[in-house]
Figure 1: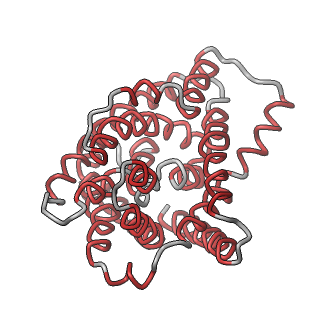
Figure 2: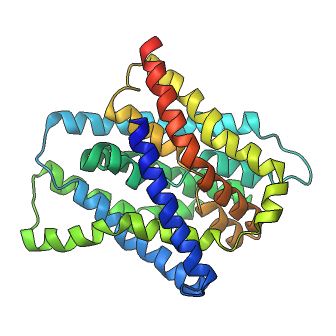
Length: 309
């Protein structure tokens, strides 16, 4: 399993490199990249999620989906608590960005390709539960953390997002065993297939704007990435192993999603609320690159944990 993750992350790194080249050669502009990002988030990802539900109803799948939802809630709550333990509030420190980046992962952009490589559509099916929890919490706790304001109107907007709508429609088609026509399924299948390359190229273009020399000198970037990519996922792995789900598709799906690099959303929210978006982008860039090594390491370590616990 660790070798599968390593191979997939290397593929994703190559695609990210292509995105960087596209940005440096002006083939894709910053404005174009924003449009591509919206297309991936609002069209491609929802299609991938919806198509994961196009499978025969099985009681075991439904049970595992509910279990994934419960574990995801517990995992997110645990990560938030850990972020307050490891990232202290201090003057002249961007603790909001550091806490956000240590909790929230690129579970859509990075999580879907990784889980799909491991478990196929069934893995993506379970991942939708984590993505649902992620969206509900990031638009409440996450927004409040970055903005410093309690804006609960964002919670309502979450339910109108393409991601949540695709999950709701997918659940309906799954439980009522509704299958879309073969022609429509083939068309959506083509969109589904571009998820990984498009998501990674968009990430590469985003990363191309980072000041690498400055990033390399900022030790806090490495500290946050160390927390997000290794410390917190491995702490999370222990209770998952103790309750006996770590070696299952459900447990590994949640762990991989939580171990994915810091969410690009931190940069977007920082821009929106006037925070240090450059610092957020540096953490995103460093985390994405370092995840090529940390993701296989986390998976390999968890495989060992399941044998001794």
